Each structure stands twice: as structure tokens, then as C-alpha cells.
Amino acid sequence: MPALPSASALARAVTRGETTPHRLLEEAQARAEAARDLNALVSLNPRAAEQAEAAQRRVQSGEALPLAGVPVIVKDNINVTGTATTCGSRILANYVSPYTATAAQRLLDAGAVIVGKANMDEFAMGSSTESSASGPTLNPWDQGRVPGGSSGGSAVAVAAGLTPVSLGSDTGGSVRQPAALTGVYGLKPTYGRVSRYGLVAYASSLDQIGPFARSAEDLALLMNVVAGYDPRDATSLEAPPAFRAGTPDDLRGLRVGVIRESLGGNTPGVEAALNATLEALRGAGAAVGEVSLPSLRHAVAAYYLIAMPEASSNLARFDGMVYGARSAAPDLTGSMTLTREQGFGREVQRRIMIGTYALSSGYYDAYYSKAMRVRRLISDEFTAAFGGYDVLVTPTSPFPAFRRGEKTSDPLAMYAADVDTVAVNLAGLPALSVPAGFETVDGVRLPVGVQFIAPALHDERLVALAGGLEGLGAVTLDSPAGFGTD
Image 1 (tube, helix red, strand yellow):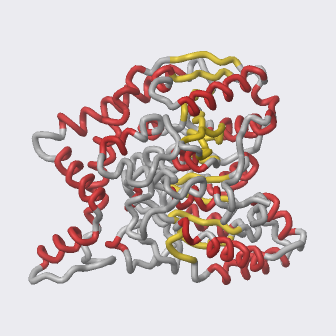
Image 2 (cartoon, rainbow, N blue to C red):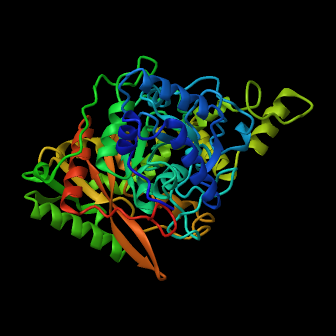
Image 3 (cartoon, rainbow, N blue to C red):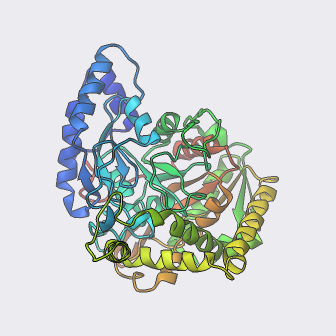
């Protein structure tokens, strides 16, 4: 399979008349068909050809389009008019979006063509993309392993070369963790930097749409398109995007703080990748130190005691009465109960029940309220750390991709996979997973990632840093055998 050019290169080729949006769409659809076994996509966009034709007309009229004809895949919890939006759940199996999310509309406005919807853990609740009603997504580096989650399909779409970029959502690491486990970039923007209008809510104070890409240039391109204020999102921030891919010069004098609490429990390959990245930064003139954030040891517990109650509230709307699947029963209450019993998977039911319990009378102060106080402590410690450092760094995941089924019977082990990522969402900060190397496990070469965290609204710093590391040759961008290779 030929290597897929970058989104930036494809847009330039369309603008110069060297190819057309329709041709790029057909090629993307052919790649998706060839990679069906990975189960990265749950549906194709029935209006993609119309979008390609519209992009072609605009290019021919002389309009400058930053994503002219570029094929893009979006996660199946991002609404796009006329497409199925199932959120990986049986309860939304027959739901077709009547409107388009702001982030997706901005892609279309920039000339992109949405090829289809990416597979995901049901309602974004998972770290492995195994809980989807459409079946699990497979990691192209080893199809017996998971791609991470919950945006596993979006990550695999880029890692396997189906499209050069994609969109996912990140509530506790759901962009960064699968990016690390599949060997691509994954950016979680500052909370409010990208509109959540049209994103099906999991935990509203934590959710954020973010991009996957294979280059800093493409990250910058995509963020300059999708970021920005949206009056339809009450949490949207007035922060015009100004992203660019940096150079090694951007690393000189950069103050990098390694979070001490992230240094234990990592596999040898993850440790080696982190150390190699830090050495490259030192060689480029960055100052590398160590910083402690003691409250991070409570981050996973606090995260789930906030995310699950918010999920309990948000998912109350899915009862079969207005949209989605409805199970027949003699009365209204019976129909609602049976609809939710048959429509929601086990993990979603578990999180709704725990969240409802944590919000119930007599337990709110003991659980949800206490978790919110820990959230503030974590945020304050990040703020203090940024007084001495420009960026903070951790592994993205303490281990590479694990085997399918390895953690599904142990929810606590699955939740612990988010140990390095959830604190960023609690604090509303931007963070970027950078492909940093490989670890060989049972004879299989698996990608690992390093996570960089910046202060709120300094997302551009992370993309510039990524470009600088690319210029040093310190970013490990490779393709799994049989996908996106020459």
C-alpha cells in the first residue's frame, strides 16, 4: 500500500490541480475497504461525494481552502448531518444526525471531506475500544492487541494510513492513550479551545475534541481549522488559534519538568523512550528538571468519581422515548427500563450505577464533592509547577498496547491504564502524546509515547515543541507492516 501523503501535501496538490477531492475520497474509501479487518470504521459518510464535489467547485472558483479535498475521519460521537452517530452503542443503532457538530462543520468549511465515522468504546467509556457494539478495533501493529481507547478507531485510521488526520474526543486520555499505543500524535486541547457543540456528552466538565496526525505540520493545520470561539458552546473560549510546527530552535532554553510521580511502574521500553526524548531535549538546549505533584496519586480515583456522576446525568436522556432504540413493554416505565437494559453495554451500565450512587443523598459529600476538592488540589499543583517550567512531561501510558481481553474482566485494571492522562482533564490543560519509540513484547515491535503538558491556552507551545523534536529526529514515526508503507 503506497504511503499516504500528509494532509498539508494533499491540500496543496488539490489546490494546484494535481489531484481532485473526488479522487482522494475514492482512494481513502479503497484504503478503508482494504483495512476492514481492523474495524476502525463503523460507517461511511453517504454524503462524502457531495462534499468532495463542493470542495472541487470552491477550489475551481479560486477559494483558498486549508484542507482542500483532504479526507478526514471523525469519531462516532461527533454529529455530522445525514450520518449514523451511534457512539458505539446499541441504544443509538438507528440514530441519524440531524445536524453537524461545530468542529466537523469547520472541517467542511475548510474544504475537507468526511469519509466516515470511527469506532469507539461505547459512549467513550473505555481504554481499549473493545466495548463497542460494532465489535473491537484491532491495533495494526499487532492485531491481537488493543489500539487503546476510547478513540481507538480514530487513532487506527491515521496509524494505518486510511486518512492523514482524524478527530477523536478526550475525557480522560481518550486521544492521547490510543495515539501512544498506535504510534501517532494525539492532542488534547485546553478545555474550551475546541467547541463541544455536537459532541455527544460523556462527562461535560472533562470532554474535549482533539486531533490525531502524523506530523506537527498537520497538527497545526487541523487545530488552526477547528479551534476557536463558538457561541453555541457555553464553555468555549475566546482564543484565536495560531498554531505552527516549530524547529529545534524553539527548544533552546525551554524549561522541561519531569513529573516525579510518573516515573514508577513503567515498562523498560517506556522508560527508554522517555529518557531518549529527555536527552534529545537537553542536546537541543532545553533545561530538564524534576517536579513533584503529590496529589496525582489521587487523580484516577477523583477522575472516575467526577466522570461517572456526570455520565449518569448525561445518559439519562437515552431512554428510547425521543430517539434511538426502544424496547416494547406493557407500560412506559417498563419500556424505559428494558430499553436501557438492552441498549447499554455492561461498562456503561456500571458507570451509570456508580455515578448515580455517588450523587445520591447521603453520599454526594463523601464522593463527588470530595473528588471536586481533589480536582482543585491537582489544578493548583499544576499551576505551581508551571511557575518553574514551560512544559511538563510524563509517559503517555506506562505500557505499550496490551492484548485484547487482558483487562476486560478487571475494570480497575482498565481504569488504571489512564494513570498518566486523567489529571490533565481534571485541570483542563492541553497535552500532546508524541510517538517516542518502540518496545518489543513477545517478539512484536509496539509503539510507545511521551506526553507533554502545557499551561492552559498554551496549546501552540506543544505543537511547536513537536516540530522541534521532529527536526531533531527524536520523533519515531513509522508505519505498521502492510499499512501506509511503500
